[in-house]
Length: 148
Image (cartoon, rainbow, N blue to C red):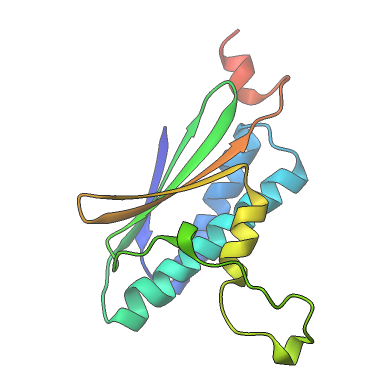
């Protein structure tokens, strides 16, 4: 398991992105799956930082924990911001409307749902935990080689 803890500020997004890219490579994800994972983590981390901390007048850290097993790469994003379950964010219903007529909000979480194989949420000990699961390809990855 690898962990990254960064301040809950927008300046931390680059470091989070680099961490996720490295983990995706270690898990053997192809470039499309790695991109989707990075997009999902970036969307959730941005929401935590912007809405959970900054707009709520709070400060705190963002913890990214990863676990790689034979079948999955699991990425958990944890924060101490106001409780918020992103899995309950409604899917925007106005995709067919012209851009200027669409309602604001919800698109980032929609993209997260589309990007990963599983998207879960827990509120544990006063912390939000969003859990993203990507199914790993079967084959010759760095983790598989370590077991040989």
